[in-house]
Every structure is written in C-alpha cells, then in structure tokens.
Image (cartoon, rainbow, N blue to C red):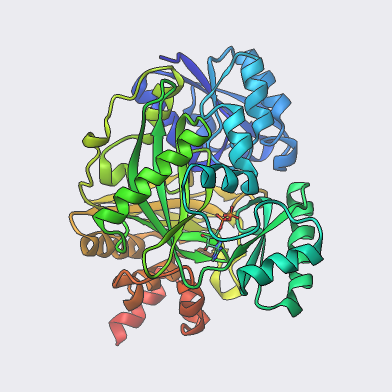
Length: 467
Ligand code: ADP
C-alpha cells in the first residue's frame, strides 16, 4: 500500500481523500494557498505546505510547485481530486517522470480522452454509439456549416478542450451558425487556450446519464452502474441521483458494457466516468469520459457500499480489484444536492463571504461532505460549491423525503446559498416523478418566482406554516 500521499486540491474533496487515507493508515500532506490557511483540509492532514497566493493560477494550478512540495514531503503518490490539475496530462506525465504515483489513469489515457473529438473517434471505433457529428475538428466555418446541414439542425458546437459547460454553443439554423461557431471557438480559446471545435447533433430533451467505472492496472474492469445528472443549470450539474429513475435493467447492462469498452479503448485504469446522453426512446450516445473522480461519486458509494476513493488508492498501489461485476449490487437509492454560495435572486451570482451561523443537517440516511463551518470565510477565488448533501434510503421516495428534510434543517447565515432552490426542485412534481431531462431547470425557473428561490429556510418554513 502507499505510505504517504500529497493531496493536490482543496475544499470538500481534499477532506474526503484525507478521510479515506486515515481509514487505510496512509499519511497525508495537504497543499494550500494563502487564502486557505484556515481550511479544514490543512488542519486535518498530517502535514501541510503553502504553495502560493490565493488565485488558483498561482497556487493549485502550479504543477511545478506541487511536484516540489511532493518531493520535499517525500510522498509516494499525489491524489489530484477533481478540477485544477486532475485532467492535465502534462501534470500526470511529470508525476510519472518523477516516479511519484499519480492516483488516476496514466497520462496517455488522460490525453486521449481530454480531447473530446479524439475521444469520440476512439470510442466509436470500438462500437460505442456517439452523437452524430463531424468526424473531427472543423477549422473552416464554411466547411463546418456543410457538416451541420448534413447532420440537420439544431446542432451543438463544442470545444475539443471544453469542460464545465464552457465552449459550447447551440445553433438552430445556418443563419445563426457562423455567429455561434465564432463564439464557441473564442470562448474556448480564452478559457482553455485551444479554440478547436467540432459539431454534434443537438439531442432534444435528453437525460444525462453516466457510468462509473473502476479499472485496475492488470486489465480488470467493472462498472458501478449509473448516475442520473439531468438536473443541470447552464450545463452544470445541480442534483444527481442513483440509480436513474429512467434506466431499465437492460439499458443499465448495455450502457455498462459500452462504458467498459470505452475504458478499454484508452487502456484506462483507476476510477473514471463515461458520460452519455439518453433520448426519450432510450437510445444512448457517448459524449465524453471524465478521467478522474467526480463531484457526484458519493451517490454511487451510497447505493453500492463501495468506497471509490479507497478503491482509487488500492488501484494506484498496484492491487488487483477486490470486487467482481457480480459483487456490484444496487442496495438502495441515493440523491446528492450541490450546495453553492450563490444568490438565486441575482441569477445565481457567486456570493462569497463569512458564514456567521452554521447548523448542518444530520440524522438517519444523511451524509454531508463539506469543508465549511461557522466563522468560515468562503473565498472568492474558487468554485462556489461549499457542501454536498447526500441522502439515501430503501426507495427513491424515501431518499427524496430525507433530502427535503435535511435541506430544511440546514442553516447557513451570512452568505446566500441555493438551498431553497434545491428544496423547491426536490418537491417539484416533474422531478419527483422521475421525469427530469436536461431542460428541466430552465422550465422550472421559467415557472417559479425568483423571490421564492431566494428565501431562507426560516422564511420558507414560516410561509408554509401560514398556508
Ligand atoms: P462539459 O465537458 O463542458 O461538461 P459535456 O460534453 O459533458 O460538456 O456536456 C455537458 C452537458 O451539455 C450535457 O450534460 C448536456 O446537458 C449538454 N449537451 C452536451 N452535448 C449535447 C448534445 N449533443 N445534445 C444535447 N445536449 C448536449
């Protein structure tokens, strides 16, 4: 087993990794920026090294500083978490060259799947269905429009380097195509330093359903079933659940097999996620593979009882998988809400600041993955997610009732959050019926008064008492 690792991340995922290491007897070293000195991951790790000023570009994204910290601390491995350097093939390669185990796939797999156009072609070649689209990158807008016309509008123009919903534009007809093509390319050039784009058919009202895979370094590969992440705002996930209310046992089997084919095609090892869109007729299409642990991994852990972070550590230590496909069972239903420091009344603008009062939810069937506490100051420099509330139960209905109860007892004062927004979604009849597609949030917001979403738990409880 690994003896000591460095965690190249912050926030809840850094804590999550520290916790798994503690249980396995692995020593941990945290890295932190000047803004994170008071962070829980710094307090809880066995050691901590400051790697620079607050902006991520001067700290958490500085590969050379992280490698230097790893060498000083003399660790065996680096866990990248998600975001920051987790999907940077150059960083993984530097780790390989320095003989520090990168706790994730090899750099070659990250590089292959990191280019979405290459990823599509790679999985298509082994028989995984992809969304109809251009065979590769389209450099010339006039050539691109011909491809779009042959696919049929509407089409989506996507950056090969895209992520987090950026560098993606919808074109409804050839009139708007040129404008959207330029916009997608410019946005991608700015955000990712790579403006290359390709074109895909726009699937109408699909569900976003993804398969968690675990692969060891000896060629054993299993999947841990699906997560449904259709509840998205601007292509960013808000609520995730497992199993998907839309997936039948036959579809689960077919998608699981396709995901394992995709993993084999890039010689994948460690934990990964193969993302698909599923249309109303249950046809599924590969969109991308995330070569790291995902924010929403806890719902899979709660339905299967498998600790994904511990599996990542065991795989990185060279151990063969201790679980077979037949061992993977869906034991219950789980839901996750991403709690963010943002103001729903101001178009979900980030809302950093000091948490003046904090009372977290708990009780039967509730898991809270969070790094915040009363008195914590949410810094403005990083992602606005401050907690993940995960609830679970024997049935979907029970998991959702628990989520509503957990969110209603979650008190956070001093900053605005999306808790009331999430509470309203959990009680929405379309979501509750398991009928949400990726268009759900847009429709929901159009029919819900904004002031309702910005209310605090206390205000919401008073208004329900009064009615
Ligand atoms: P990112 O890497 O930026 O997250 P993805 O390719 O994973 O981008 O897509 C994010 C989301 O965008 C999907 O979950 C889905 O809601 C929407 N989307 C992507 N491709 C399509 C498509 N071809 N048709 C319809 N919606 C799409």
